[in-house]
Length: 326
Image: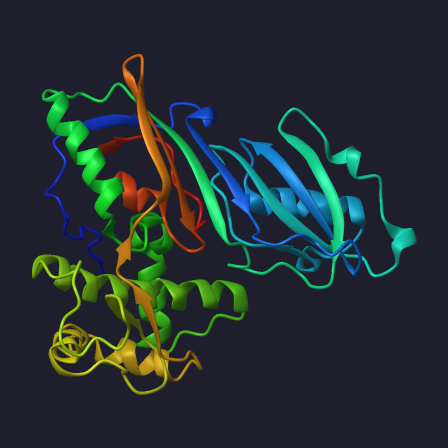
């Protein structure tokens, strides 16, 4: 079974291609918690710089040094390996005297930036924003003014707030697994893995509804029956759909094609929620650097930089995206 990840573009399919992540420094991400650690509590907070290392591997190294289980390590989200990133980790160490020498983690690819303590473990989505600096190399731009106008439109008007392809796994494999769970009754003992698969299914249904709004060219405007003061689409789960009228009819027309997925998600304990369908970066700017273009912008927790990039250029990269979301 295959699931299409070719979601419609808001500004038409790009006619420019660029080299993406030729080296780790081409993709920089700084994670912002949005709050300051209290300075006391049972969890040690480590602010870490890393280059070319994935989040799970760093978490394992922290657990090894602290002599705790990997499950005692918390973080807000996975960051891509082929990148230069800063992010926060928490370590459950209730006894202060057990704290190790954190400088032993330092290497050419990992640096401890700061350390503090706080009252709770970091969990997925606990951070407020991620700030990006992305260098796209050698874009084959024919009409420079047209391309620059496209960049301005994306930054000024935003893009459809799709979940990025990394949410769905390599070649959409997470969706195949989700189908097996929701439709075929497959059991997965690993709760974290099962949660990721179900999240992929929920995200895919959201993208299907958003795709319909993009195709109808009404994704940037409120339509009759919207339950919020801004355009949204459902994250499916237990409970009554909060939209009505035209909005509800559009959503159900799409979701009626996925009855087994909807029923399955309702029985997993997930609650009905809504998510904004417009993704508009903040602090956005761009400039030419020699023959390359450098983009700077900030996104909220759970928003995808690749969703911005796909509207600008066809990305040419041999690097597999690892993050489930940043």
